[in-house]
Image (cartoon, rainbow, N blue to C red):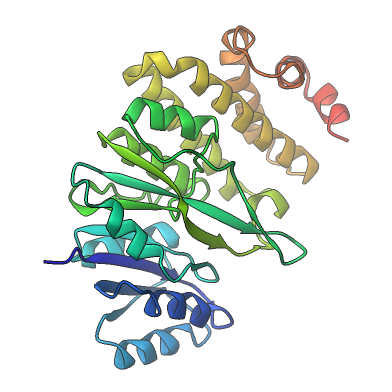
Length: 314
């Protein structure tokens, strides 16, 4: 019997680009797919488009819920999944025509738990560029995979460029509105024994004007701190050998959030002080790491004075 893959596509107000994503899945050379479209309370015609495709192709299932966020939409898709493997795609993104054919070829090794593909990210000029360097095709242990994820070495923190064995699939934390992918990927890698890197399988990520790096900092983005704190504390408890990598990733996430908050003129002083407090808790250990000198200077300055940190971020 052929392997069946459940493809989960969360949808929210994407009438302008949803067709491109769905068509890229329907036109796959590998056909044994379940395509789950989860409308997250769209106010435009997205739900109608989903139902249109459900009528056109027996493989498509259109679901609807009140607006609860992308994590809840993905979880609803996981609940409806019937395939042995699960894949996520965001609206606007697309995959190469042989994406799942290549995945299934890799699944001849039935001991795999996760397959990591390669992301080509759209630049502001409309061209696509590989987000991370090409890696040799190989199988990783959970510790090696987590280390790669922490260091963004041949692996992203996106949930979309990976394929997951359904019987061990984690769920998304619906209380985390930003960096939910990082937390999910960590939980998936933690629960896996064998992870395959295959840079020959290509996922195309569309340029998003509302990405975190271009968005004005808000209260919701404080969930980045909570997500990264969960990852860091869990690694400290369960993977002490990964501590040097974890503390670098954690500090850089804290510094990024602090910089975004200050540059955006974010006025919730208690949140900014909380980030500073978290930096102070780990700064001494961080200075023992092999982190870049510039990051170490920023860590020291931010732990001592927000005024000085703000001046350095002008």
